[in-house]
Amino acid sequence: MWLCEASGLRLLFDPLLRPEHHCGVFETVPRRIVNAEALRPDFVLVSHRHPDHFDVPSLHRLSRIDPDAVVVTPDALVAWAARTLGFRTVHALPPAQRVALDGVQLVTTPSLGPDEWGMLVEAEGAVAWNQVDAVLRDAAHVRAVLDQALPSLGQEPTDARAQGVELAIVRWQPMLEIAAVLGHRTAFPYASYAELLAQAAAVRATAVVPGANGAAHVDALRWMDRYVFPVSERRFLRDLARVSPGTQPLPLRVGGRFHVEPGAVTLEPEGAAALIEPLDGGGGDPRRYRPHAIPELLDPNPNGHDEAITRPRVHAWIHETLAPALARAWPGMRVREPLRFVVEVVFPRAHDAFTLHVGPHGVRVEPSNDEDWDLLNVVAGSLLWEVIEGRRHWGDVLLAGCLRASTRAYSVDEHGLRRADVGETFLYYALPYDEAVERAVRHEVHTCLGRSSNS
Image 1 (cartoon, rainbow, N blue to C red):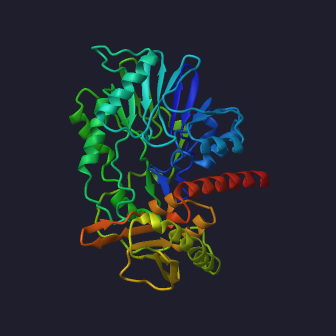
Image 2: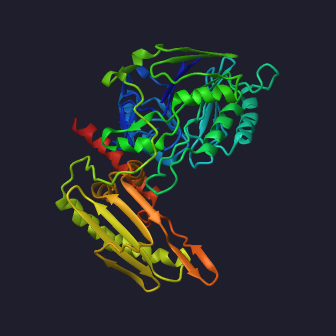
Image 3: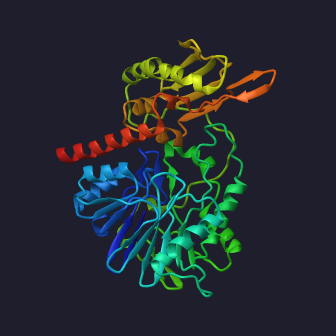
């Protein structure tokens, strides 16, 4: 979350007002509450639909304070939510667009991810680039994006300021969000980290601040932090200074203010402290990279659901929805023999297993765990129930370490071994990821509005 003040306008990027987010999977680092009434944004810019940037309760709060703030986003789902929550003016703005405001120019920069952008902001001859989570191919792609976008802001390359960006808020953490739970490598990601450093250096900004990745897992899921965040902010700033000696690396300061002028950036560490209420003493970063043995999956049941309700519903979903979905998908998996899909569902007091034999003659479900499985999914029962009911989506469960998947599905004959064309998180065949996201967002929006109407 960033608040940008330029030429009398206030631009609020990706508001996240409270510490807990992503359906209670993550909390901000450090934990803090933002004084929503003090923000007073003219524009609310939501870069994409990931829940650490698109937080429905935060948008709901802001809509009640000032429904006339203008929401801008590239994502139709975000736009729908903003309108439904009560914002009167919502604009869908794709990448590579220029917007001229009163004394401020904006250019949306592209991403390889769908419905997502970063943004260049120019005012009084100074330029800031909030990359947000936008993904670019490599350092050359960064250069190409800037070479195309900066001239539209009146920023031409010069010998003194090669590319005209004063402050760049960059991607920096080579995250291993799902490596451990999918059985992938959790070793240090040398290549992806080297690429992030090269891309940050390629901006040739006056100053760089590490953006995003300002969250840790909540206490019950804190073990995940040993795998997900392999680089500390301190290490990144040190490495960037070596890779790009001409760039000033600046730390991210919650409650700080960055002053951006042509050719200069300064940090006032407490300049925006009035906007922030620290929680728990504002302690240090709890994340530690120690990528070793992964613990057994337990169901945290964060919302206290009754197994007498959740367990039969999950069993029925496996038989009535998952099984036929896998049978429909089997012809496209490029195997000749049936595949054994094993689902283990871990509840607080029960551990259920099902083997789905899927092949050319349909599907057979057995209440057992075939240890010679071809694909294995292990999932927390209470969270699976919430996904089935549209109360959360697969991303919450996966990033919480509460959905794990492995595959060894293949065909083998005299010509050798060929991997099956099948997704390892095969639960998605019954409920596609994007559909789960849309259902969960709609549930959260309507829940917010229901609470509003009852207050």
